[in-house]
Amino acid sequence: MRRAGERLFEPLTFSLACLPLIPALDPNRFLGNVMRRLPSTQKNNSITRERDGRAFSRLAGLLFCGLLLAGGFVFAAGQHFAAVHYGYESEKLRLERAQLLEEQRRLLLEREAATSPTRLERAARDIGLQPVQAAQVNVRKNVAGQLPPTASVLVGSSASLNR
Image (cartoon, rainbow, N blue to C red; front, side, top):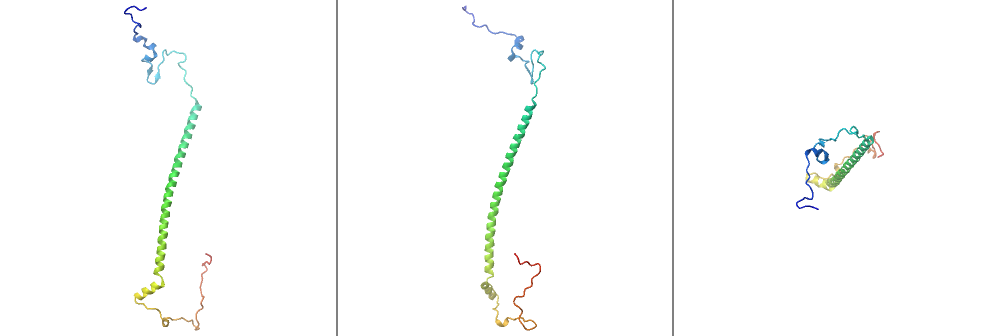
């Protein structure tokens, strides 16, 4: 039983000398990145962890595969954007070709209209020319007094008949 005025628990009192015994409160526990062990004369104090060479080679292999995969994605993206760019360029060139063909047709029609016999005759009369009369036509005769043959064509040796 408790006596009157007696506390249920005694307050904890400790000195600074007992701090190294409580690991969480030890001020010398961490010095930089090196953990200080107390006591430092333990039997396994000089034991260090062994490096695993296979783990490093696996890590290097994974890094290489990741870089190769990322490089493949970058290359594929470049190819895709180049294909889109060439698609736009070909569409632009297709439209330009259609415009040029339409202009060529228009110019051919204009040339045919300008060189038609009726238009040439009208233009000749406008500048004061008159139609040819039969008396103005002079037929050339060769020395013997005969007309030249009708199908006299000279063809060079470099001319090709196969087209």
